[in-house]
Every structure is written in structure tokens, then in C-alpha cells.
Length: 357
Image 1 (spheres, rainbow, N blue to C red):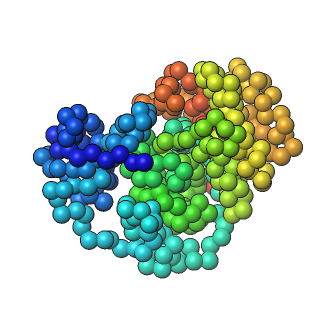
Image 2 (spheres, rainbow, N blue to C red; image 1 turned 120 degrees about the vertical axis):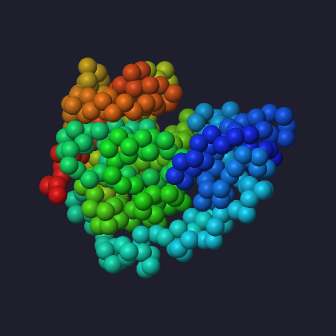
Image 3 (cartoon, rainbow, N blue to C red; image 1 turned 180 degrees about the vertical axis):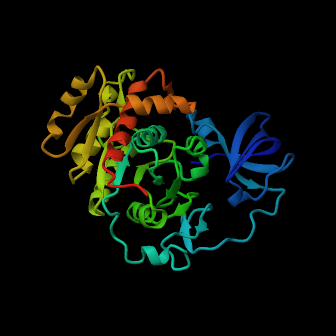
């Protein structure tokens, strides 16, 4: 059950495109940091009475352990609904309409109405949101002029504005355009599903290499199939079905003490063994531990194409951006292998591009 608390905005901490961050004094006497989405709330100001969803705080979640503004009791709410008739988060109190790229009213409709191919575009599928900038760095290091797109699925966070990482990657010049699919919202392109999202990036935005990953907040349960990243296999199959080249980004860690995540995570292995039904390129970073990683992937040799790629140039570029990267609570310096795997995937994908410009 969700938990809701009333409170008063003590101060507005930060206003970003699509996102506002505030401090709230709750009626219980406690205070909390909370975030809201102006497209649903309207303008939030100091002194306003608000209703806050405190579920994540009370569950002690990590990145999700913040309050979220449900309603501003002292404001008229958002402006009238904008264009578009595709509703995301349907049949919930938060349902919102968007102008999807596939709609007849969209400027992209003519380019997409009959489109069912991405014309050989490489598609890197990730199992962690934190790897997206690293994949982009690998692409940029190999092919500086490439147009790079990111498709955020609805497997985790739904608002793209919640991702500080995407905002930083764009500012650093790693990422050119975004799309959101399913019930995720806030991308440069709003799309209905992963298939149409990939086609929209290719046909409407002339993307050379696309990345697909959930937003922040990947879920795992310790069971064989109960984790968000199994969608990685489905994204790889979507790329193949659309005439693209699927590239699997490995989740790799030598610091994680959980046996199921040591080396290549069972999340990646399950996505490749069970969910991905079409052949794809599986990219292994060239590291001192590469042989051990290859051994974990040995049973995939007959199904997928395994490549070893040097991540060094992309890692140098990534470090040069100054982005503060972390994954599962560990920094780039603590788990460089996680990001090296992503850089290697991006480097390999860039090498599959026929031409740029």
C-alpha cells in the first residue's frame, strides 16, 4: 500500500526541465526531500501545502528513498492538457496524455506510418541504467560524429526527468536525442513501445546508434526470473526483428560479493540464455579477467556472437567528461569493470555503423 503524508514546502531546492526538488516539513513533525513533476503539478512554491508519497522513504529504499509530490493543495494544478491522445500510466490517478511520435497529429507520422525497419542500425541493450553514458562514451570514442539515441523503457522509473544521469550525459555531449516507450514519458520522442521507439529514433531522428535500457530503479528479487533486466533479451530481439544489429552490454562486477552477480551477472546470463531468442553480438571487455568472463559465456557460443573489445579509448573519454558515475552504490573507480563492459559494447556498436552523415 502507498503511504501519503501532508506537509508544507520549506524551500524549493532546484527547478530543472520537467522536475522540481523541494524540502517538505511533514505534518508528523519530520522533514523530507521530495521531487515533483511540473507537468502534473503546475508550479510548486515555498509555503505551499502539499501531499507527499513517502512510500520509498518508509521502505528504506536507496535511490527511490525520496518523497514524491502527489498534489499541491495551494496551486491550481497544471495547465490545460497539451496535444496528443496517447495516455501513459493509464487508469491510474497519474495518467497523462502525450503526443506520441506515431500519432497522426505528429510531425513524424508520415515517416513512421509504414516503417518497420531500422536499416541495420546497431542497438545496444543494457541491463543497468547507469551504463548508458558509458555505452555512449564508447560510441563517441570510436565514431565521434555519430548521432546517438537513448530509448528508455518503462521497466523502472517512468519519468525521464528523474534521471540526473541522462541530463548530465547530454550536457557532456555524449547523447543527442532521447525517446520514452510504453508508460515511460518525457523523452524528446514519446513512443508506444520498444519496436516503434527504435524505428522513431532511426527514421524521425536519423540516429546512427541506439541504446535501450530501463530508467533508474532496476528491480531484482533473488529469483531466477524476477528482475527488470530480463527485458534486455527482448530489446535485442526487437533490434533483430527490425533489421538491426543487437549488441548485448554485459553487467560485470568483481566487487559484488553476491555469487549470482560475480563476474557476468546472472541477470545478463538469463537474458541471453532465455529471453533473447535471436542471435546478437555479446561484447566482453578486454581486461585481466577476460578469460574468466569468456568461460561464463562458453555455453552461448552456439547461439550468439562473442567479441572481445578494448575499452581503453572509451574509458579515457568517459573519465574526461567528469561525470560522477556509480552503479549499485559503487563508483567508477570502485567497479571500473562495470563501465568498461558498457564502453566496450558502445565501441563495438560504433564499428557496425556503415556510414555517418
